[in-house]
Figure 1: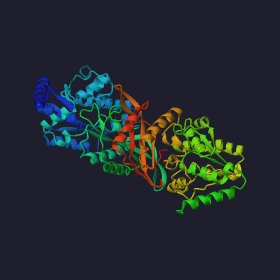
Figure 2 (figure 1 turned 90 degrees about the vertical axis):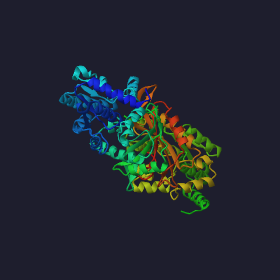
Figure 3 (figure 1 turned 120 degrees about the vertical axis):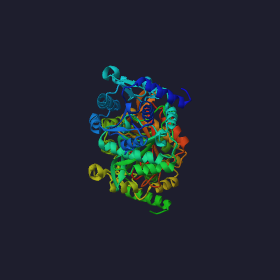
Figure 4 (figure 1 turned 60 degrees about the vertical axis):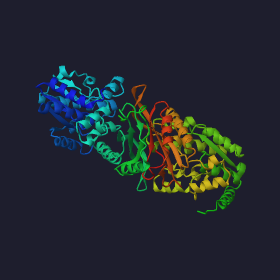
Length: 312
Length: 312
């Protein structure tokens, strides 16, 4: 991959303009650095011909949909916020198998919500934030990439009459961040830690319910606050399905278990565990075990491989 | 509690001699410091009138039954090794609820195996290693004490014709260790970290099977080797029931999760988390995730309270 990211931007903007012509394109913004870069590149290339949507799937971090829509509005890029929370929660109800959960989210997004929006928009092109690592890991069978339609057996051109464009497919995460900086995205987006496609559902072992989402969301806020000043590549809170014995008000109880994970990585292909200072680990544990029903906080000591970065 | 442990020993030996008279007493040695002290005190007081048994319940650490029997033989104290592995595994089959598992172990021990041995021995007295913390936590409802017959609804005198004697019931763990040193127990026993009554079954969330016992036993060996030179009060490996995503040979897999826990405490009433050096945590993680089927190793960050020291 070329090291000159300004050339990369110029090339992609020109290519998008040429490919889309006077048609309409659409893209889904998740708030992660990949889809944010695609949104800015696409807007530069296509202006009002690009319709950008943000789908609230109920699996987002605290305040995330509003924060992202506002950040892009501040850059002069309008984003439509779509409330699809019920649709996702219904699709996830009763599922515990990781593959089934991922499939339910992907399927609800692509085969239901997004397809509807594409049809309404009349778009002929879909801009997608796939990066090189996604492709490599899908090929290797490690990651069940949430954002590759063919895994759903869908040929988008035949099925929906649109073409998928993947302007970032030659970059890894470090290249995407460099591009984000050159595009003058806000620092909290360009330097943002990765967040998985299935969002907080990737951080719940077992049932994904409203209550369990609320709990992992609150724990995520704590971990992100405490580790915001670290240089870690990615950090998260995970809710396990197992329960552990604890004591509250001098009585035996069974409580929920939250895992904190923080890793160092350049491109997500491999990762080592962050040596978080003990004061910080202890403070996170104290704050997390103050959440209702939680009586254990664990820190993940496993590099990738043999673990993946996420849990589900 | 008196600070003079030599006086304590002399008093207990004299009391035991007086109480037991010319009858037979029996005690079950687990290899922990409490039951080891009771065994030596009882042997000093009663000599051949004390029958000491060690029940192999299939839930022990690697090589434990043989190691303990040999250590006491070296002190001139004969111990009968009873193989009850099948009986315990049968009683645990299919149980996942922590209370049911604990009950199955207690019940198999007291109401089946031990009762049989007491009857065969003709003992009128049972020496038991209950310490003050056990009584306090049973009263408070925190610990479902495995070694208190009344919790099983058994009055031993009426049911089996023997009386329970608890010579250590005024001591906490630090006092028991001081007594162990004065009794010249080997250092590896007097300084031994606590080990729970339900043994490795207390460290398995979910089903207790032969395979899962073998796995948590192997992880326990690693943790005990790595932390042997630490001053921690108690350390352990726990097998969770949840599975996590990992990568092996470049393929996605679901793997088992082992939790490492190490705590600092004086008397087990409260405990703080050991700040284990990162090199050691990383080496434990590397060794543990090399065990078959394991792809996550976590470190428990939770003090007591709100967690207990053990898991089940």
